[in-house]
Amino acid sequence: MTRIALDPFVADLDGESAALRAAGPLAEVELPGGVHCYAVTHHAEARQLLTDSRIVKDINVWGAWQRGEIPMDWPLIGLANPGRSMLTVDGADHRRLRTLVAQALTVKRVERLRAGIEALTAASLDRLAALPEGERVDLKAEFAYPLPMNVISELMGVDAADHPRLKELFEKFFSTQTPPEEVPQMMADLGALFTKIVDAKRAEPGDDLTSALIEASEDGDHLSNEEIVNTLQLIIAAGHETTISLIVNAVVALQTHPEQRKQVLSGEVPWENVIEETLRWNTPTSHVLIRFATEDVQVGDKVLPKGEALIVSFGALGRDERQHGPTAGEFDVTRSPNRHIAFGHGPHVCPGAALSRLEAGVALPALYERFPDLELAVPAAELRNKPIVTQNDLFELPVELG
View 1 (cartoon, rainbow, N blue to C red):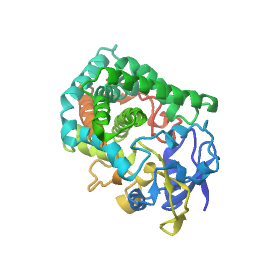
View 2 (cartoon, rainbow, N blue to C red):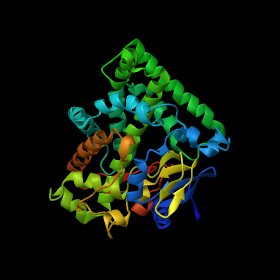
View 3 (cartoon, rainbow, N blue to C red):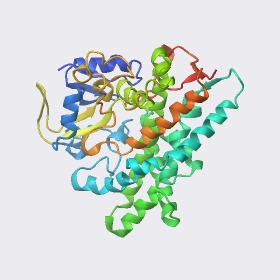
């Protein structure tokens, strides 16, 4: 099996995803830092493996980890071993940790956040409208980032004063370019910041999910302080990064497909279609780290060996022709059906999917209603991905508002 090295600079994500798909449903890959693992790259096999009880999140199953081959200063260590939370356990422990979060993020409860999201969106658009006419704007920094960060912070009870430090630390947390000597301190700083937030909520509870987790732990659900801290970190990280990329990628897709943009802005095609097709075609999450095989698992005509690590390559399987037909590589807002798994599948499916969809569903139509003549300020081919193996994330999105 030919090993495919994932590019730490993410210079050509589409080309890399195509190579992974061509390698078959199970591809042998090398993560930045020389770490070997396998990737599932086809839709049907991904669904199968994401519900296979032999594929677990316990890092102690990983043979390379047991043998001491994974250094603690590996830039991606925080994604492979982020501490005990609903992301890293299975079975009853996973259900216990996930239940409160899932209850807080049901479609019905998330819909109650709509008015607040609409207000935040309007305030961001007002700031953009107040800029000098003709000024180039980084739409990612000025619009796509603040909205999900403010929404998830309000939901979790995180003070806006902590946002600059969170942004700085998460940049290092996700990047493959973080110097190894800085990794241990970065992880310690993230842990300290979220511990401070939890301690503050323990002293003064509020109407937020962090306070609810603390209350549940005191009422008999037996969440440890480590589990609360790590769950908070997980939700904040996942709750803003995915939505930023969803908004940014949708704008790029519409701007590079003017006829489809016209269909959407005229009302001929609903915004829901834009969101779902963006999630499939240019998914916010390129690869999810990392699961481990407790025994040999057959995947097509190949075998995922016992003790090996598995990543899910959403960027590859989103354009799988076996699932989405011969036009899988094309952006098409009229695609039907559109059965992607951009938010995962099985017991670890993202509990924040409804929130992310709602935020994009509010932000995108409001943006184009206010600025229907918005244009990219540079050719799409010049937009550059950040060096993040897990996120399909641009450095910036320069636009002219019109």
